[in-house]
Amino acid sequence: MNAIASLQGPLFVSWQMTRDCDLACLHCCTDSAPGLGLADELSAEEALQLADAIIAADIPYVMLCGGEPLRVPYFLAVAEKLGRAGVHLKIETNGQRLTAAVVARLAALPIRSIQISLDADSQEVYQRQRPGASLAKVHTACRLVRAAGLPLEVTFAPTRMNIHEAEAVIARARQLGAFRFNSGKLMRIGRAARLWGKIALSREAEDRFRSLLDSEAAAIDGAMEICHIPFTVAAGLRQSLTTPPAILLVLPNGTVKVAAAVRYLCGDLRRMTLGQIWDNYRAAWNNDAVIAAVRRAVADEESQASANQWLSIPNGGVEQCVT
Image 1 (tube, rainbow, N blue to C red):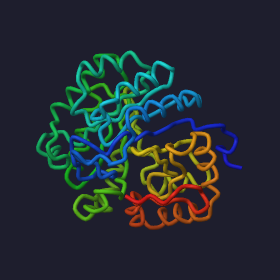
Image 2: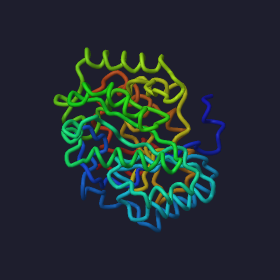
Image 3: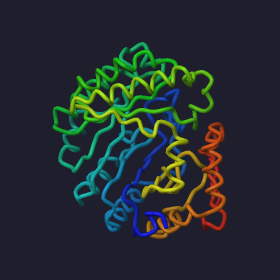
Image 4: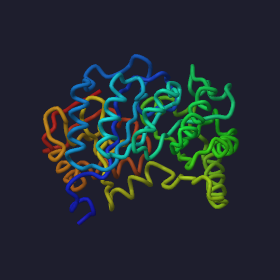
């Protein structure tokens, strides 16, 4: 019996609130871009109902992400409803819209971390990977987070364009006061999959990058954790086969995925309760089709490219939904 079998609900909900974003980053695994929110994304009323359901289920930890969650008009209403009920929050943002006023409101909530993408140490490289983005805005956002006493987490997406600045970005993250630096191999999903030949690291560059992270992690000075294990999606999925995580991944339209790198949905919040979806999720890790899909994703990285073409689990009670 795996560990989740005895749990009455998930320990963590990763909620992708929208596909809309300020940017169309080359490495994006969700195909997010300006004006490209899904046509059937949850309304404000539905999102607040989901927040109520999370609170009622006593789920302790939620990540609000996207796309760019700060483009969602009801983002703060959802964050405040959850936070005021004692749910701990992680906010994942590109930093382009994180103002002092927003940070002040978040500072009143139980924030586990504000995770900001920092993919370069020069504007030239940053805007090459994130067209239209301002590195200065990101640095300002990081400083605002720390000035408010909130925990800052930095994430770095390694590509051929920015890998030469990786060491400088780690140093910058320390200088900005981040408590954690997150990285690892790119997910071969969405826009990243389509541009893989242009952006993916060579095996040699990937090995050098992992060695850099290992070295930085070994030289712990107590100020910043280097978080890079598991380094690949495949390694994470392999671990999930034996110990499935107690996580629900909620998509912008309220459907719920079994795992980011596989196609299968285990529920639809417009038609099912969180409890029913949790039961489906636990059952999914014993479903032959799901297990086969996970093993394919482990064995063949290219198969992960179809992960955004969602499918129902056979006999899983969810109508097919493809995007």
